[in-house]
Length: 196
Ligand SMILES: Cc1cc2nc3c(=O)[nH]c(=O)nc-3n(C[C@H](O)[C@H](O)[C@H](O)COP(=O)(O)O)c2cc1C
Image (cartoon, rainbow, N blue to C red; front, side, top):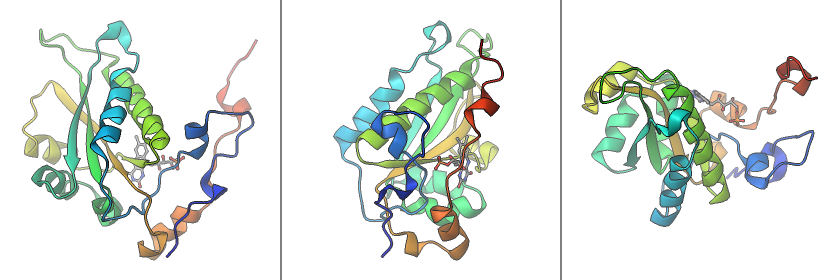
């Protein structure tokens, strides 16, 4: 049993950050028997709800699929490659959707940006609740869109796996190696182009 519960996955920060930001990382090993408490799931979605957005349009939409449900199977069936091998252990799969066109047919240029902020809120709240998240872009977008019966105003951008940390030893070799590989980031002076 390899539960990575020590500080080895914590961010090695150059300044003091709030705890969920230090502790958040994206595992692929989830406990396949664990469920997410409905109150915690409520808090996590509420955190997304209170994200900022351009003109306060709030263009984020979610399909929340709990393991064992038909919708979970549909979402899982439409993950790509390696994502399929690990994400079925997550307790919940959340499809992250941007409403890119408003009900009057006008396009919303900031919809994907706003969705990203809502998902960031969600991940931080999940970490605060003692849960983990792992976002995925590797999804069969068109097939999932059709399977979920979404209308053309909605664009699927990503899927978030949410759940309780599991046994890294259960992962195939290549994924287990990634699970323990050092976490890296660009240096601050590489991402701040100008600072006057
Ligand atoms: C938009 C987006 C798409 C991602 N797609 C995948 C994916 O398809 N499969 C996967 O295993 N990880 C995916 N990731 C996870 C990233 O690889 C991970 O967040 C990054 O390596 C940083 O690691 P950390 O989250 O542990 O800090 C994705 C993350 C984001 C934000």
